Amino acid sequence: MNPSFSLKAALSSIFIFLIILTGALLSQNAEPSKDEIIQKAWKAMFGDAKNKDIKSLYVESYFHGSTIPSRQTVKRPNLFRNEVSSGVLVFDGKRAAWVERKPDENGKPRSPELIEPASWKHFEVDIALLFPAFFDYPSEYLGKEAVEGAETYKIRVNLPLGGKMIYFVDAESFLVLKRLVGWDGGTEAKDYWDNIMTGYDRYDGIVFPAGILYPGRSGRETGFYRNVRINVDPPDELFKIPDELLK
Image (cartoon, rainbow, N blue to C red; front, side, top):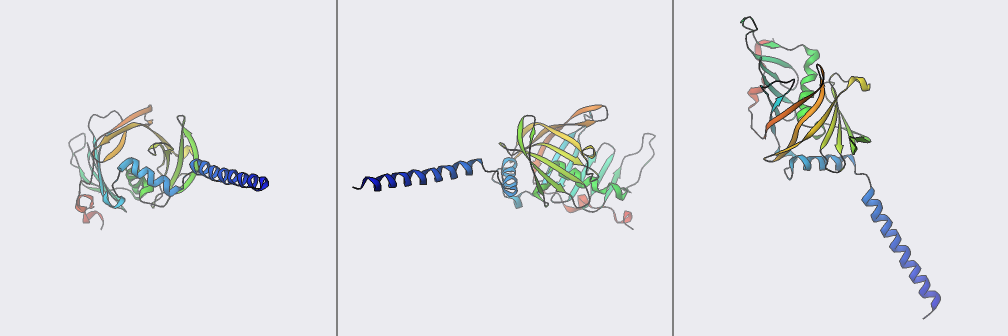
């Protein structure tokens, strides 16, 4: 056997092996695409359920120290109902209204009322707080950022009515660790409210935040989520604004 040929063959084999090894290492270290991040975030939250199979979400929220929950129902992508201590608010995808109102502190009855148009966008944000908006709307990948020592992927969603959300998706668990909430579509950092997830709870068919740390009326507060359910099958009538308010 020609020694020169054997050496060349060996070097060639080593070179090919190094190319394959380098490719494998690069592949392992490659940053996932935005679509891959969203797909993995879906799996982390909903397991093997398909996107089209999750149609609605029910959550009981305890915020601002209240012991009485806000009972919130989302019907994808843009219907929202919020039953609070003072009445019932609905958002029909375009407009928002009080559809039921309890008497005021003096016992005076209050009628249903259309919310001012400038606040309609806030209800779209309310939905995005419960159901990550990148599952339903176009989004933009903003790169990586550390949150509480964990590497995250930043994804921004500009909501149709003007609100903005920036989600920080954990690079290992692919659950949202933090979100910046732009209620009025602000562009500066000061225009966003930050929410830090306090952990996650497992329910039947879903992994959902246990609660959040958020800027409250007197400093940082903790809000809690409880009794989360998916596919509660709410009829569209639950989100309907009375015709007399739309005249």
